[in-house]
Image (tube, rainbow, N blue to C red):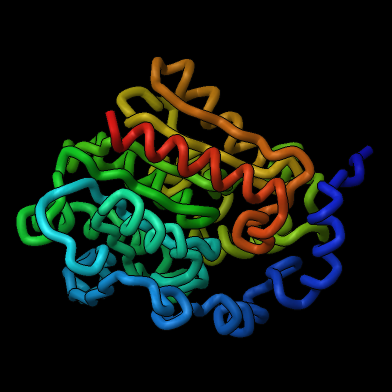
Length: 317
């Protein structure tokens, strides 16, 4: 018998008002509407904050032309850390500006060079295209370290939800291909497992913000006829990776009442088992993406404070 979710009181009060605006029970037919809802503009993101946001063209997977935006503190000089940002949206929606308020914040607080990439989305561009686009962007950052004013030994990869899964995949590729050496990986409620069989995905069917139906829709869009196959590349679905050794220090957080809870906890556990460093937070009573949807709530403030404290410690080592 599946237990009903027990939401934090502040979040429970907000949830009914999200009906129709969050991808619960999403099918491919719903995707155009949710893409429109998730499309954040440069102006929405930057506002009047004193940062520069410069677009650049880079070569993505198979030489396709992609756009990245480089966000830095206005008047910045010298060399410093960098954060490679991969937006969420289940790998089927969102833009490089979606959910990227942290990039603006970190550019100011840490004098960081933050790069966010417009990777290509499924189902129009199935796996591994989006993942390979994201890896190409990381390699471009490292190659352009001098021009961008970043220390290539201090690159952190960041992503939430689908972007968290892509960030984890990029870290695996960089390890396996002897690519850029990462200082850390910051994964918020990451989408890691395509197999649709954990207790948390079964429990979150038809409820919450991103439910089992939406998750299955996104993975089917990404994998197509290969959905459910036994030989999916672990970099595409990082929960399938057998070897999690050699990864950079990792931060993972996840809500207790969401699809991704069990796969995120298992990923942290297996990083520890492989001898790696990982900080894990499971936010009791929270739903998926609560820190973006309801940043004014007490639990979201605590979540963001824990995330930002980990990053500050990492960048000042």
